Structure formats: structure tokens, C-alpha cells
Amino acid sequence: MLHFSKLKQTSIWLVIVLGLLFALPNFLPDSIRGTEDIKGQIPGFLPSKTVNLGLDLQGGSYLLFEVDTDSVRAAKMETAQEESRQLLRSERPIIPARNFRISGNTVSFTLSRPDQMELALERLKPINELGQAQLLTGSANKPFVVSSDITSGRISLTLTDDALTKQTRDAVVRSVEVIRNRITELGTKDPTILRQGNSRIIVEVPGESDPVRIKRIIEKTAQMSFHMVDTSVSIQEALAGRIPPGAKLVRTTNPAEPDLLIQRRALVDGGDLTDSQQTFNQGGQPAVSFTFNSRGAIRFGNATAQNVGRRFSILLDNESITAPVIRSAILGGSGIIDGGFTVETANDLAILLRAGALPAKLETLNERSVGPGLGQESIRAGAIALMVGFLGVMIYMVLAYGRFGLFANTALIVNLVLILGALSGLQATLTLPGIAGVILTIGMAVDANVLIFERIREEVAIGRTPMNAVETGFTKARSTILDANITTLIAAMLLLLFGSGPVQGFGVTLAIGIFTSVFTAFLFSRMLTSYWLMRARPKSILL
Image (cartoon, rainbow, N blue to C red; front, side):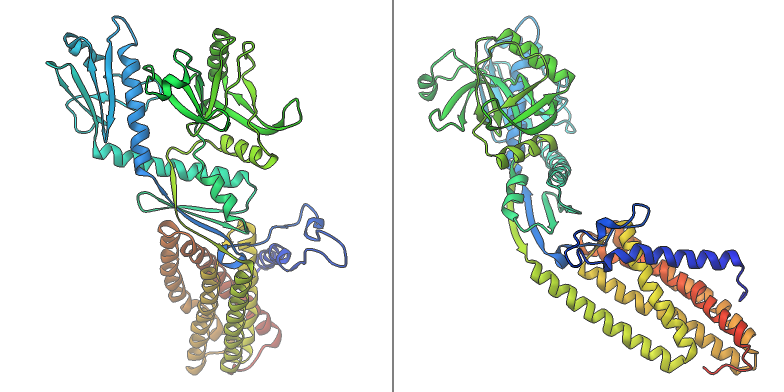
């Protein structure tokens, strides 16, 4: 039990050296005497990553958003209205309908010929091409309940509460992914984006001192679509209420042209975009380039080829940012958007388009900025607590167990090095609760040694030789220590699975600390004790 083979000794020391190498970059300054980027000068074969500090340690931005349920419902109802119009006209005979209205959760319209009611209901059954709605009758599990009155020719599509709840839940899940993509595109390091409840999203961006820009980037829905400009009536007539079926009025970003009449049906939407970059137009002004996938390129090419000489509008969040004239067919699947951008706004728009559109509008419920000074105070307070606890434990171990206490203290130092190295290698985020987890780990690591030493003391008291007493003490304390650490590890795993933010940070350091504590108590501390016993050959042990 106390004999360590050369291979075993080498493995233990190798683990400690690796932990030290991974932990070392955290202690290197950024520059020394004018030499910049000291950490960047570390050879590529050596670890160079440092521990990521959470929002409470390095400062940053915190925002709490809520998905606007009304916008989810409105988008669903508008989609259902337009799909209904298209499905009725999708094949011959065309089923004419009028008086399309949206009221709350219901889309209603009137058939021009009530005798086509049965055919109209049949047309409303298939899933549309976007796969977003299935209009069926007689099933509570379907998104819409369809009711009809053959006398008046009226048909109503009512969105169920269950469908709205599911739509909101799906919107939150998709919003989390879109927000994560947008924050990552900004180059921020280790952001935290979490769902809270059924409709809220928490965003924490450590190190980001400009919450206004973060908020602007996140809140923008960025739903882009391309529409033909409707010229069947003048703007003045449209403003007076004479809007043709299948058309709608939108505002423009051009103050000289506040409203524009466009066709509701999009030629192409942002879902077909594959890339977007900030660039410059021929006049040297900031612009945004875009690229479609193969489907979008074909649809956009066909649409522009059929409408040469006409204007089309590029909509962003239901606002026209530009409405150029189609001079020739655009067949390359790419183009440039001019919209009076600055370099920053063009870059932000490119980020939004690359990351994808939010499925619904977000409302900001809470926003705050944590200054780096507060983070430094937290680090200082945590470091003081760690050092006080560490020194207190070390003094107690020496006073209580003498030489064995020194072995335990050496193992404790190695334990902290291994924890820091593991956090750096895994690129885990260290938060203030995480520091609490490290402090707790110190107590757990010492607790293992206390159990072992007390067991050795009992064996010495009954007359065993030093060698037998130490070997028996380590052997018989093992099961107790493993049981205690396994139960604590289960708790740490539950924190990682079901916790969020700082709670997960605590769980990470606690889980890592359990493994390092067992390693230092059963292997490193025992190896140090073995070295002393083999060399000193003591006749007795004072504990």
C-alpha cells in the first residue's frame, strides 16, 4: 500500500506538473517593462489559457429580456392570413375571398361564393411551404380550429391557447440561440445566455462596458425580406385607405419618403441568407453585402428577371431601408444594401443578418452595468477569504498533526494548483460563488486528511508499528472518504444540470475540487508520507 512503483510516481508528478503548467499563465503579467503581450510569447506547445472571470468578478453588462407574446401572436396571425389567401388561390378553380380580418386570436374572411365552402375547407388543410401552420378542423391538438358558416360564406381560423403557448416557448428557445450567435459575433468572451421561466431570457456579457450597444444588437428583431413595390395605386390613395388586396403600407428610413406601398408576399426572406458582411459601395460609403443560398439565389434571380424596371423594397423589421430600381436581373445570388449607414451600423446590421432573425420582439425588463471596480473588490474580498481560510487551516494542521500536518499542507497547495489548472484548461468561468466552492474544497481536502490521520493515531494507540499504522490508516479511511466525496459529487452534478449562472459556477469548482481532493489525499499525500517512512525509518510516530 505504501510502495509506489516508478511508473506510479512518475504519473503522479506528471499530473502535478501539468496542473502547474496550466495554472501558470494566470500569474503572468500582460507586459513587463514595455514588452507587450507576455502571454502571447508562450510557446505554442505550452498551455496559455487563463481562467475566465464571470460578470461579478470582472464587471460587464446584465440584461433581462421578455419575449413579447403579442408579437408572437400577431406574427402567427399575419402568417395564417396570408397563407389562407394564397392557399385559396393556389390552384384552379380559384376561390375568391374578401374582408380578411384579424381579431385577437382569430383570422376571418368571407367567400365570394358560399357554395365553394367545402372546397375552401379542403384547400386549408395542407401544411404551407414554410411548415409553420397546419390548418385542420375538429382536433384540439392542432394549431388552429376552423369554423365556418355556409349561409354567410364566413370562415374563421382561431389559434388555440396551447398552440400560442408552444409558439411562445419555441420563440424563446430560438431567441436564445440567435442572441448567443449575435453576442459571439461581437467577439465577446464567454457570455451567459439563459432561459428564465416560460418567456424570459437572461444575458450576461462579462467585460462588456457598453450595455447600450449590446441591447441594441439583441433587441433588433432583424427580420429581413424582399418585396416588390406595389404601383397599382398612388401613395396618396393608399394613405387614404385604398390599399389593394395583398399589399400593405410600410415606413421607410428615408425621411423624404415616409411611407411605401409594397406587396405582402415576399420574394425572398432572410432565412435564405448565408452570409453578410460590412463593405463599401462604389461611392466609398459604408454598405452591407449579402449572399443567398442556392434556393434564395434562384428565387431572387427569377424575381428580378421578371421585374426589370420596377422597384423592389428591402424590409428590415417591417421598415423599408432601401427601395432601388431593378436595372437588370440579379443572378449571382448576392448584392449590396445601401442605406445611409455608418461603419458601426453597417457592421451591426451584418452581424444581425449573419446571426439570424429573432422569431419575436423582445422587451427589456432590466439592464445594468457592473463596473470593473466592483469586480476587483469582489476578487479582493474573495482572495482575502481564501487566504485567511487557507492559512488558518494550515496552522491548525501543523499544530494538530505536526509532520503529517506539513504533508497535508503541501497536498493542499497542490490541490489549489490543480483546481486552477483545471479551470484554465477547461476554460470554465470563475464567479464569486465559484470562489466559495474553492474555499469549501479546502475544507473537504483537509477533512480527508483529518480522517486518515485520526485513523493512524488510533492504530498507533493499539501498538502497531509506524509502517503498519500508516498503511492501515490510509486503507481503512478510504471507504469513508470516498462515500463522502461521491455524495458531494452527486450534489455538484445536480447543480450543473439544473442550476444556472453563478449556481453552475459553484458546481463546477466543487466538482473539480472533489476530484483533486481525492487525488491529493490518496495519492500525493500518501506518497509524501511513504517517502518519509522509507527514508527516516522512525521507531514511533507522534500524532
